[in-house]
Image (tube, rainbow, N blue to C red; front, side):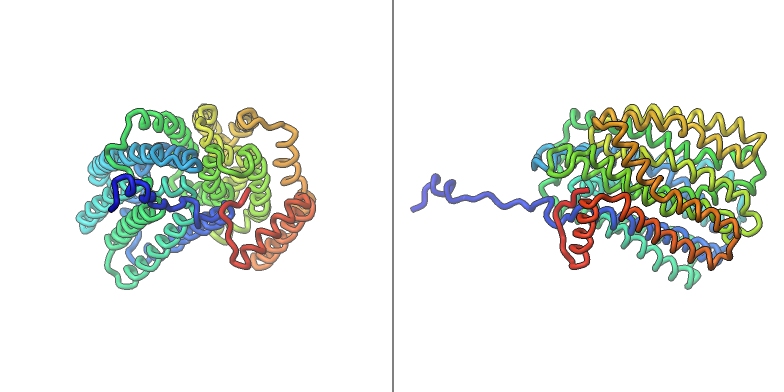
Amino acid sequence: MRTAADAVTRRTPRPQPDLAAGAGGMTGAVITTYAARFASMIAYVALLPVVLTAFGAEAYGLYMLTVAVGALFQQDLGVGGATTRFIGVAAPSGDFARMRRVAAASNMFFLAAAVILSSITALVFALTIPRTQFGAELSDTAWILAILGVANVFILLSFSSNRQILTGIGRLKDVNYLLIGLALFRIALTLVVCWAGIGIVAVAAVDVLGILAFGIATYVLRRTRAPQITARPRDFRWSVFRELFAVSAQLMILGLAGVVIMQVGGILTALMLPIAYTALYAAGQRIYLLVKEVTNSLATAVLPTASMREGGAEGAPIGEMYLRGTSYANMLMMVVLVPVVVFMPQIMAVWLGPSGAGAAVVAQILVLSMFANNNHLLAVPILTAQGSVRGYAVLHTIWAVTGTALAVLLGEPLGLTGIALGLTLPILLLEPFYIAIALRRLDLTVKDFAIRCLLLPFGTVAPLAAALFVVSLLDPPIALILVICAIWAIAAIALYYFIAFDPATRASLRSTLTRRLRGGRTVEDTP
């Protein structure tokens, strides 16, 4: 006969799934992040001429208005990054109670944000659509597009917490696979809609269905991969919410200042110059964003890993992550930046025709600012993992204010060139302060930073870059430019491998590539 004591003795706890199992390492996260960003870029860029041709400029303009307004209010106000940070710090110790409280606070914020921000979006549409000039036959279409735009904001924010939790526990690779699937979904269904001529409303409906499917998939994946972090209402704590918001407030300021820096150039161009110049500035900025994405994608993968290291996970110190990551980011940037800057006039001439000269100057100025700007981009997620980006928020605010003022002052006499210069000059003066904050917080020396992040990435390929510039003066045809750029990339990577990398790094790289070619997987790839 079994007694109560026997039952207690024989009862064994249910095994809990390992959050890290199968998550892969940082290398996989970086690769899939690049793939996801590329897929998203293809979805947005490649579909533009297709939709425009199928439904006309006026209908497409209304669609883009709803997309732009929706994007303005799909902001997580820094809570997304804060959620990833707190979950990542708690994950190595398996503190599920702490993670559930963070998840509960994050869920509460995003649900409230979904209601409030979608309501504000609806109000903005109510004010802007009656003042927008379009044909009377599109009146009903405009309001339906507005309703779908509001739905997009509400759905995206409602499910956002699941994505941040998955990223925090090291499942960024899984999220990236879903993002790639979302991009393919949008491309396939939008092409069907355009082929069938169903209408621009159907294009917006595809966007909403895609976001809904992505949100549901992240929810199911989070319940499957991390059932221990399923938050209940009783898990909510105001103290955790305040703690989450304290970090997110700094990220919110950082993000809002970043939006001003990125968007004010186009706004000032529209206000100060003929409207046609706005398209030229936007084209130049697209090239800048393409180059910047080289580091931005890497930064996305750094935050969860750095947060776990901050929470005690094994691996290189986060200071080493900053040095190594910035060194690699600068090398990758140089591979892309140099040919883009050198052949910018030819690129713009092919893309925009004779009017591309103005856009080429804007792009060259903005892209060249990456020599400074790129050195603090990876510090943002790493300092976020430490719990404070106050210094960067202050510097970003100074950049936004002074850049706007200089763009106004220089834009009047110099036009597009003046606006681009005004927005980039502040970062040349502020970047040493960004770097100093990172080095002090991470206990690093100026010498190590200068050698590993500046001298090796820039000095190694400087002679080759000079040779490429000389070749560009010969004004080769575009077909030959593509061949020259391919040769440049191969030569630059080879120089980095044999000169900038030490024997240990080369051995580690060969080992990683060999494992991946053989299908091997590791739980944690040390960056």
